[in-house]
Length: 215
Image (cartoon, rainbow, N blue to C red):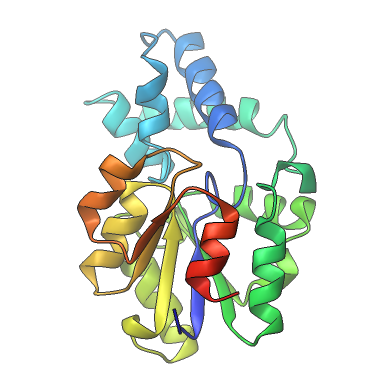
């Protein structure tokens, strides 16, 4: 597909971090006395901003409870540093090759700015991205505001970019503003879920993604 800009989700799309996020949420919540949930529940909210994720996991939580949960989550999550080895095999080359052929690359993520900045440096991917947007500085997915801000940065229309993500939140966000999307099956949600948001394509391997992107 011919687009000027490729926008990537981070967790579950570029980086194999879904299990670590789920484990960190589980540890933080149960340590504070919240009931342990099924693992799929923790996985399903990955992609949302942390506040929105916690509100979905534990409806009715107060601001004070959210603050305590966020602190506990951070204590567990930041014990592990994202390294180049955590990048899904072949995805670093996809990003580098997109830049080589002159396409813009950016990130739209549910991570916090603190979390993304750390991961951009430690993963080695940071230099490839023109702009990154995080849930705690804009609005959480599936609200499309972060995509609109990225489009404004480049001065392009939604049809000139593509959103690549592993969750329904990524694809719904793109669908809301008429942006093409590509679902990847190696993260949180599978084809049966991703297909509900009219993606341009759903891929289950990095070579297939390269083909769709024309690399």
